[in-house]
Length: 308
Image (cartoon, rainbow, N blue to C red; front, side, top):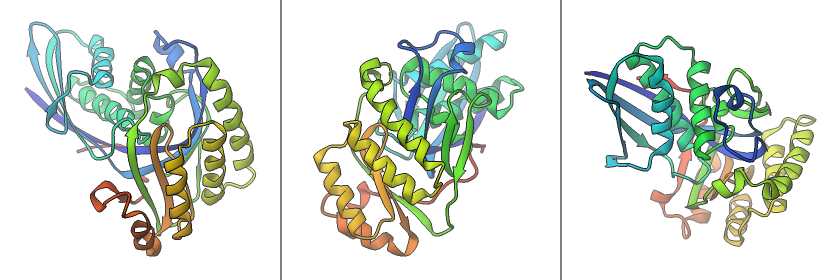
């Protein structure tokens, strides 16, 4: 029996422009060339993954999320199924995820889970891969399961990410918005939003991609995180994602001193960039809507994933 552990930070998506087909890819070569442009913030919280590998007569995969059996954890299972053909023999695999962010609300939990699973399984199987190579399998699994398009590109790097060319890590092109040591992220979620009908819907993506391209064009002329969030707020409005209750929340946090704020892509959730000294004021402004245990105040992650 072999035990391995890995951590991958979560990534809050502020903006995306899909560059994919109408159907999920069925080959790694295709998956590496599609995904999303966009941007967002990689945060200190994420997914801790422990993996237990044992020899067996047939392959089996069991996934737990936050100490509960999760038979529907399709991305984790897909990562395992993509990597197992690289070795001989059969294995029982038990994956235990400790997820520190809301699931399905634009925090990149599936991407962080996929990357940390790929890292842990590669180590357990003795597969000699670079981080980019392992992340390519995570990216492929996300596309196959319709849970994300480009988040893997961000979470393996850290910071305030701009994905300028879509694709898997090693095929994409990224840059960063400069941040200050005193910057913090305040975020909270009402509920998840199903992604399948969005990321592979040509009709929806036509509007989304048009508005996102405007943001990508403008942000490079002024690569400032506050300006970026202003553009992303406009994107959320024009793309038709922004709900009335989120609009009210964003108005409150901006009035209370947040530097910028917008909706998570894609989730009924928000994130705001705040100076450390203004955190308490912003939290107090939305406390009636989000109790302290429903709010997350976090630092930016600059280190990406790591073994534990």
